Image (cartoon, rainbow, N blue to C red):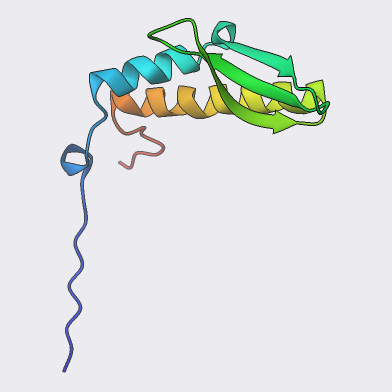
Length: 96
């Protein structure tokens, strides 16, 4: 006979992001830290500004400006959601 044991994690036992990670998420979730540049092959590259220096870090390549801006907006939304969950789990429904 085989027994299957499962283990669940609660919010407090899950690994929490470090202060450095949260600082990075805050930085990258602001549109002012992003730009779009055109490459020699005609593609457009999205980049965000490094926190430590004036360097730009490339992220994605797209064929159109609209596609590049959509990629930036999606990245900003992704990291904004990660920041929201650093405050703890979101209550979606309660019962009486």
